[in-house]
Image (cartoon, rainbow, N blue to C red; front, top):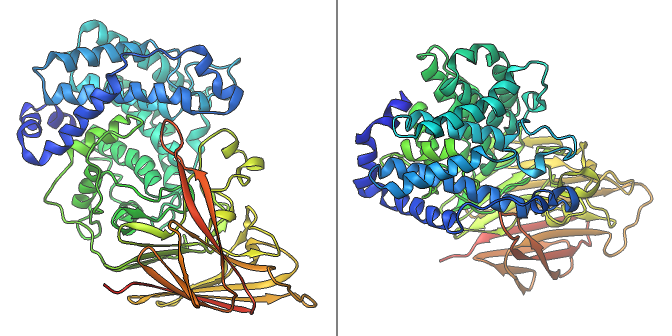
Length: 568
């Protein structure tokens, strides 16, 4: 049983004294120092209300998540160093402060500040209930009686009672997204740990949420939103599935599923080179993955899951997510085999082709422009080498209120097709919507091909066929366009755009960039434009990044681009 392991002093002695945990423990200590340096910060009204006024999430969330990081790091350190009073006293102070919060939701998830009900349950309210419930269960013999009373009182008031009331509707139960797993699994944890006798009352609601979460994945197990959303949503699913297995003494085993097995294998596929990732939709260009979760899944599915090579060293993320943090530490196994360097994998439902060699990694997609955390990116691709994306998909933009409103979202650079490796046709970028897609997608074992003219839906173009052929020598892209009857394009009507993370050096018939050599046919020499944009971070200020937009004015009906890693 997981909780018995977490209560076992021998486990924490191993963490405290074993060299394999030394780096991880140090990162927890560093996070503790960073997150507690300002003491327990209050969230002023003007900051809490700022999102409703400006749509800016940063100010309130920075304080909120720093408090969650302090809570998680002081709790882990209290378990690793049970004789160090500082960590335990800090933990109890932060528990008390969290229990005193007006709401456990973040401002961006509050639909109406005036009519707001503070016992509403969003991602972070549910996570907070989960965190406090599990800390209570593990440290029950050490916590002050008042702290234990406060935890049970606040979890009951904010989570248990609202969710037990079937007249209260929680939209996330029906979401086919990470919300269903995070909220459903976290709420279930609060019941299982603190009010287990009430769990049967709400289990049908939890089952519905978890089933809806699994419907957000298709049979291939690909997460359209990228590895960070896999880690978040599926990570909480794994936490819940483990708790449910223990709670029912093995009678309910959600891991006994081919679909769950397929989802578990996703991380080993999406690292293209070093920590350079496939970053379609609101993904990240670079990153790491929850290695404890991956090690656990590798033991569940030893024939199918090999942990990705880029595991996190600190189990606590910047949002202070407790459930995954604890299990990253508890399930870490340094003897687990890592992913192979060479891979070819095609997902029929996601329409992704991933091809990886020791020299470079490549991923292309078809799909449609109505996917989770959608970008208008039908036909886009990524090429990475030497640990970095070179032909880039820049991933998520700054999360603001407007970013998640369809009428504004595609005015932002990141989610629009302006920032992707796709053409511009007669001045038109791709359109949003399910019907704007790749048609006739085929992968024959060597070449991925489709027609993606419908992604633009313009009268001047009747067909735009794209084909990718990756080999150990490099990638060849072939685009062929068919114009509508009577259309004679002029210079600049058909532009091929490529987004590079480094400034290219132009050569005769091609260019070099970031360890890659490219050649082309069917177009005049490109123009290169520097573009600066803000990138998303979990908290704090948005750093600025620069990409180089390489635009080819296509002069023929067929355009080719061949890209290969430079010889050593």
